[in-house]
Length: 133
Length: 165
Image (tube, rainbow over all chains, first blue to last red; front, side, top):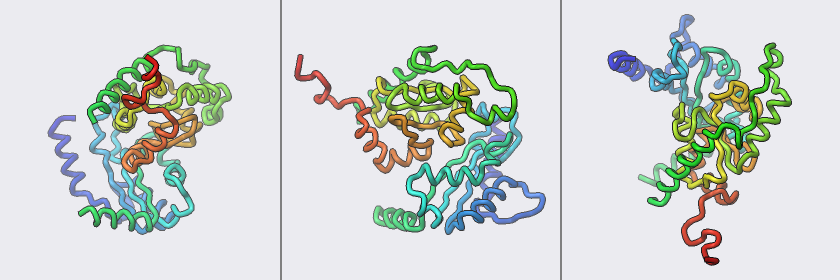
């Protein structure tokens, strides 16, 4: 990728809101839409941030030949459903399980970064951050 | 802090030699590739045994893309850096490059019930992927775990045999 196209894709990424909820039939973000739909249905999250970091990885060797703009995602999920899942591996497996098809198929999600919290943990985190100020 | 940096460099150097070693600590993954889709989705006994052996080959085992010296993925790189910062003893560490073997690459996902690489094992127990390694590093949980499992390089002065010159 040339510097010019890199800058262009960066500019595009900067204008895309991670909270966009438009569900047009010809969506430019079909994977993001699917992620939002599946996680919202299954986990009833109080916070759901979906960050598309694909542009940061577009030049990686593993992405050679890929035309998808939806390969790398970073999710922040706060859900009461995580109360029943102590330990990060169990929570991550839960989310991976919801997106199993999207991760397994060719041209689907290549990388998925997760931060999973219960509402209580999110609150504690916020208080700790406040206290540190 | 300074000694940790040295330790991490040492870790990287030594682990890369482990990873580069052709067959010594590494199980043979050159088993015939099953061709049917059905078989590809099921972990063969042979693959499972080979991965069992890999997981047990050292107290700390990282399945990664690339080698510790030249990771081929940012998440693998971050993970190896964290282990270096923690001061993991190179003698107690092994890295396996999943890019070298497609059977390992697919097999480890099913083996761990975990769809992404890298994957960290400590004492044959699955710890997690990059996000978990980094968050445990930040929270201090990783230092506690590695200390409990006695897999860190000993601090100066408490080295074994120090008193028995």
